[in-house]
Image (cartoon, rainbow, N blue to C red; front, side, top):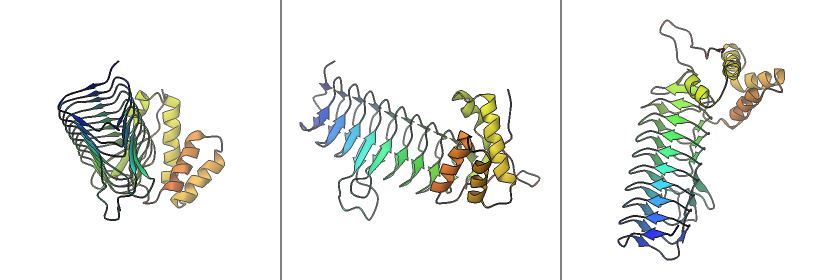
Length: 275
């Protein structure tokens, strides 16, 4: 396949273009840019310096990648935006460079960012995440693999979200969200396991039940969270889900998102299920 560049596009000759790259009308591509094979830029796309885009990505109209971060501490140091293979950015998506020499804003493989999404500086987005329209991730937010966000959800800076979570539309996430959970609200609250998402991702009934049991143990215990997770692992040293919760608890900086209260009081537990 040959590289195709529309005559109205402005592409710096120093930009590195893979085989079969297609650049549409009125796009602007700077010198310090790498576009992987088969990647398509529709029209009016702006790819600034220090951006690397993987193979077979598709950037729709008015996507802007690699502009300086909205960080008053930024001093024009060399930082990057790095995007994995097979990523789709719909219209008006913006992804900013990182802040801090040598750092990067990173998007994993197979992600789908719908219209108007924004990733701030130093964001790390895992593989195969889906962000519905106008989701915003503030600086230094980190998101695990296969997380789905409803439209207009907002994530506070430095928040960590574990893998396989579901974040409801219009939610305001200000605390860390542990793996496998469904969270919604302003501020966000956990409403149990992301059972539909886990099922679609291949977690069988036994796995979903086991994860629910682990969270039930944490919810009903009397120990502080970190100590409770460590005690859980000590009782289940070979359990990979317990180990995952321990790792997450150790990187947690903003505290875990609390469980939603039932209408008649108490706390809603992540009930287990079997098949």
